[in-house]
Length: 607
Image: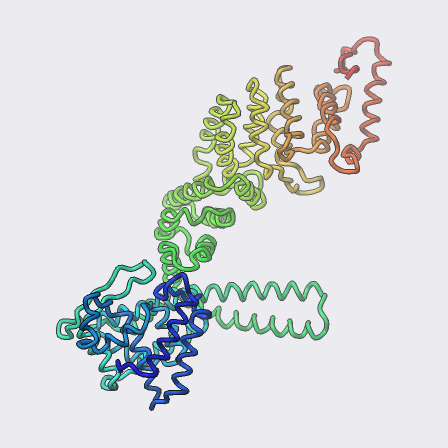
């Protein structure tokens, strides 16, 4: 089979054209994605050989595969061999006609020929250790960027391995086996990823090859599991999309019928497979997923999402170790939120000591992932936390978060207030981001309190708060009433009614003004809500907070309106004017302040 003839000349031309199409990279760096373009001359050459050089039982196919495979396995001859190699080595001349190639060319060549049987015949003629290595290369190749043709080829090879019988070797297979065993071989360095494998062709000393079907099974199971889950996830999403399409009602009669049929097919398939999936060993599936993540295999990013959200896998020892060791793969807002959902779900159903220790490890790992995010991504996570668990955040459900949080909060904020400077702003924002993730409500309350009692810290703390527009969160109320802003509620509960000095009142006013007009940042509170919360309920002559409320009203009236309709129109403007007029009118009734009730001072009248 190593004779140079018309068939080898045509094959030689096909490979030369392929090498030209792939330039500037050589053929030994051919990738699967290159084959549709670079492989055309090779498949054309194979077709021409079949038409011009007919041979019994497609013998030329086997010879073409044997030549390419031998070219891959055999080491390149030394330069000195050029003078005598053509005399002593039967493969020398035909091997020199084929450029250096890799396994991609071999596997795609066999797929193009549609000849898995001859591939298996040549495979099983190799020494046992080489045979296993080549089969592992095939499994790895099939598992990367898998296409339907790859799957068919994989299954066909598996079938041929299973039904192969000894003694079916013909002259080509025997010559191929003898060539490899005679020369020994050195695997080409495949894409710079694997070191060369050396073997000696002594069949007497070769170890017995392990079961080849087991190689196929082990190699394919991870990819098959992942593909199965991706398919089921896609079908579930398709079912939801079809339901939404039907609900919108914008389809014609024929389209509606097609969508209904497709919806029913999808439901039937998911129902039939659910019974099978219930019987699967979930520990095996989770182990496969963790292996994909740990080894950064193809589509490991998709697997991270399944890993983070699949609650039946969560909090096993292996799951926690996988998360801790691969934190770098979970540094996206979506994955952090999925991990937090899983953490809260586990924490609400497991309260024992061991569970709390696991919660602590996972919380620490997730917080580390969160701290690596950008500020905008951190705000996205905080928004998700508030939407899921409200103001208390994680501290409401996760005991590992509650333990020591108040002390951590006090220490961190005290350090922040002692380092008031533009240089310290970024560090302060980073520290605040961690606290706001764990317990947004407690963090905002403490910041509001410190902004009032710490001299000169109010503007710095307001700048920090305004770095988190996610805190501009409207809390839904049970029963009647308008939704309330988290920040306004925290101001009311932590500060309002507790201001004991004029300085504290002044800092409160300035702090509030900055939250409404933070410059380039997004305002955290609106003038309308401030008016409804701190002004309207206190415009009464006997209210202790009347003077402060009027000062707040004076501040908010200076805030420009961002829309065509002024915000004051949403604050009951007629009752507001009536209350102010009544207060002014009260000064005309009393020449001096009644002893039995509070009454505004003359300064308040001027205000």
